[in-house]
Image (cartoon, rainbow, N blue to C red; front, side):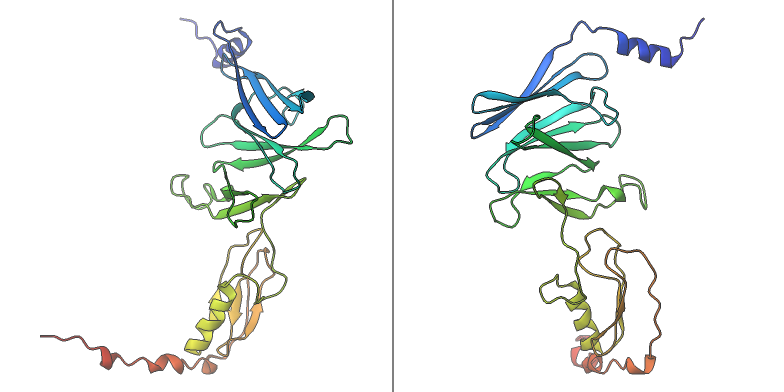
Length: 271
């Protein structure tokens, strides 16, 4: 019995014109902007993915979606949105597509209106990986944030099923994505509470307190060493990997205030 190579079968399937091919589409609108994302089904992958954007009744953008190599995209469209992401009064067009495959990958193409250019709309791509995202106004300012998680942690320490994904909050700035702010100095009064909590732990127990943190792109605290008086003795630069090595004076770590705890006052009634 002759065995046909699997690759040859795959190529034949890709080349064949499926009889059940059909055109599908997604449509979304906001104000006088309406977008339609259409594609052809049939076979293993979709094809002829095209985005059309109409403004005030006039088609100003009509292009086929291409991949990074300039070839026609074959990724499966998931969702289409038209929404103002940056508060400039001009809605962006957001197309979400899925690359097909186990666990991966979802990405978004966000199209921004640029009236002074022939193409009218310019896109920026953001890869979400396994985790995807949700549009949600988290701070109540009327603009949506993009709530996601850090896909770099997939398989980092264990299997995918057991992987934990730190939350990421992104915002669209008008031409690109921003995930957050990087602290400029340790213990910023207007920053997150984590470094203040470290300080309080060291003071209330009169001990050295060390905290080790992930070297994320947008950290809220640093890997730090706090002395028994609540002073930051040393810390690593925000977002950078490294090892913090410091000399300490154990005799200064008296635990004086922690000694206020009197277990005898909390004896349980044995009866």
